[in-house]
Image (cartoon, rainbow, N blue to C red; front, side):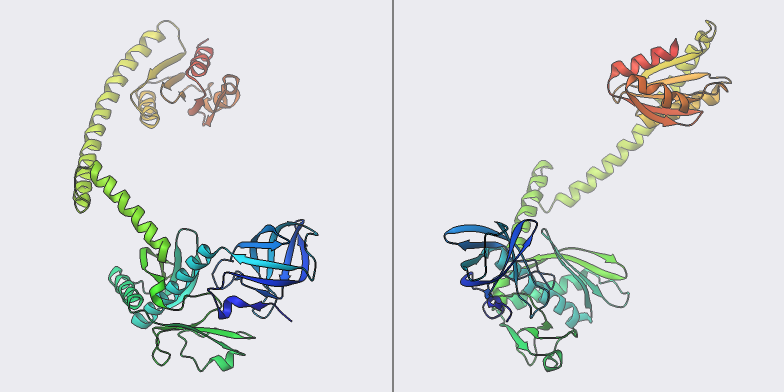
Length: 411
């Protein structure tokens, strides 16, 4: 005889006294089977309940509940060391009610939103994920992607149904064939017993679908369904949303964030989009000016560095080193390439980006390979990098290491 599943007929039951009928071990912990259980085992997209199991006044955690079929036993993974429980023990099971109720709100809300997309547009739910931060469903419309207006209309429909406090009923059937009298929106053929959840009037339901999860008795208990965003996914529309308490908490958090942003911009919440448009334009203007200044600066630096290299050549120098704390590494590399293009024979040019402790190596000398220097010499100075024969990049842990590397090359 399999475990009696109390949650199926009374999802509001939080605890029960029961008898252990089997114990197995997993990871040196007891996994307990009882003659009845209030724990929902993970399934149908809904997470497992968690809670406690008490034996002789000692409380152990139930970290996970599972089954092998809807007609199988419910297995409770516990924190109890292997050998703690035995068949015949009288124990008390208690679920974490807050988590259970949140899951009831979320699962019922998912049914309602999926049902709204089906009733309004013929969209079929082909995927369901109940995560910690959001619920996601994939709505299939034969390749058509839902518009933001359609998604908003479905959301409004669900929240109106929530306010109307429609009844939520679960009916059980011995077989799939017997369950076909129900007006389900999607056939889910399988062997064994079938439970069908109906929202609203059975004759003309707001939604009707086979489901093994737990649900509240009325839609008002769902509280709220809030859509966060949507995106195309494999020819379907993926909808991110949440329900009940978690949706309210997120909306409160997001509103507080919006208010903080508005305050930082010295505007109202409604004025944030306009302020951001102004900032984006200013940023674009700033980037344009910065590009012009960067070009001007690089031209000046190139002229100065070229003159310095010509002077050093007269003294027999083969390595030409320069420091810079204004250009970023990428612009500094562009400057190095420009230098090499303007000079016929640059044997070795080192450019040090002071803030990042990065040294760029450039060469037109046939007997000097920048990549080999980065690979074979830089590690002696705690440098890591690589490159090609004509250029390489090496990052150092400190300015002292970078300087010591350059001095070594100069010698």
